Image (cartoon, rainbow, N blue to C red):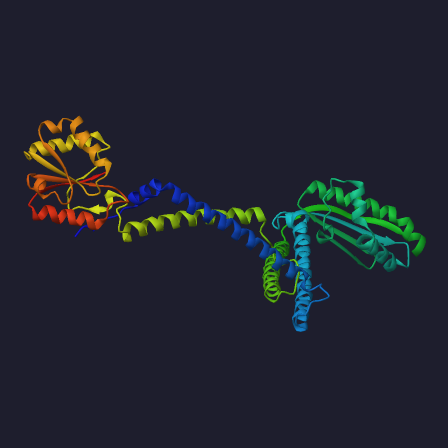
Length: 426
């Protein structure tokens, strides 16, 4: 029995040979794909409009519990957003402090310190005068005055490195800094402002004498500054983690709200719609791919289940040659086979009595085979001519001859003990 064999190349070649059929399938699938894309886009637009109008429409008939749930979600969402804003504000403020403050730049093992001490005399109201100076130095806008005096000074969070105290009739000021020049400049301005403030305080508290007792500078070690720096660093890290946590919580909550709204169809603006052009491109491409696949599947089925021969290469002829005489080299090869096997008479089976059979005989004549071999064109009933032949060929026309006809030819050659030289596609 004749077996069939297949390979992708042969099936693709069959598709090309039947290009009109392939193109028809491809065009139909492309049109169907584009139409499906258009319908899908319209459906998505309609669904989006329904969702967008659901909560605001006067005709909305949804469950009131669902609407209340959405409103509860939105209230909670505002709380999440507010918490995130607060976390970001705290982080940014702490980071700005870390970047600019004097304290964070100080080396705790090499702290430049400037000391200034005053005595209040010639008055019975020394304690009130001291309190007036403390109020002025701590709350009286000294930072702005320092910046006015010298804009190059770093006075960010300057109170963190300034110790101001008063006891009895003594006023003490200690300034810690990382830069000796800036420390001296700041202290110089403070002392100048203290002198200038004397007239205002005297007008309120009575006359007094302000005497500078000490004005010195030195370098000291103070581990407490390291502890403060570590505390600020840890605080910044805590704020940064809080921002990350609040951001993640907000995004997760937004996602949950969005899914709920789309699922229940009670909110607007939560369903996006792909553009018509993009949808058509996607569906058209899917249609083209589907058309190619459908065409390939069709020709596979025709090759596997069809009765007619679509390609001579589909025939497994047990090692016998499959000739293609459109290539003149195959005729030369056949001539060599005939010479090698000393074939004096060759029977050519033309199972369909097609005109192509005569053209094959003419090709043999052109190649000079008729001078060595007697060529006979026969039909199935010409047994006498067949018996005179020592070998035979069969002419096969694609989409005309069937696998059953080739099987009968093979069995016929075997019964007559004739050498089968193969099949020729015409």
